[in-house]
Image (tube, rainbow, N blue to C red; front, side, top):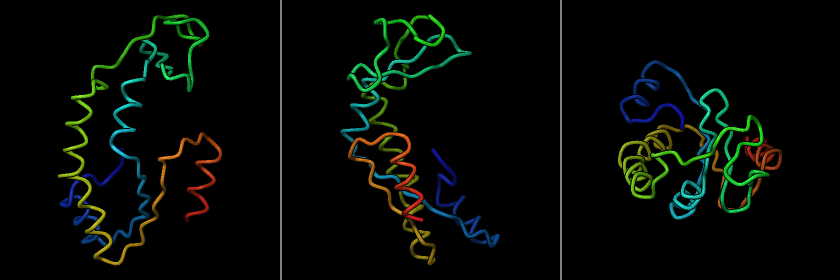
Length: 130
């Protein structure tokens, strides 16, 4: 997630004299689809804690949120076909923003998130890229 998401939004920023800091996170589509497929979330809307069925961050009790004790479930937008559609929209509408910025001399920081890293290490990588 981020802004701008379209070439028109990005061009408006440039036309207004706004020079953005661009951080482009790269992750292969197959990994995105798999991570979304494995994601489970607390069904209590005031909690929303996130877990994974791939063992990365499993709840202590299967199907129950560690934080509030509510049931866990899948988000409808994590369905693989929905994710594939979202990725296609990204490629069509959002990815061209990177080219627009690059063609206008905006420095782009690329962060490869393919290798599984967590928290502080990923943040350190981002900061070191800047």
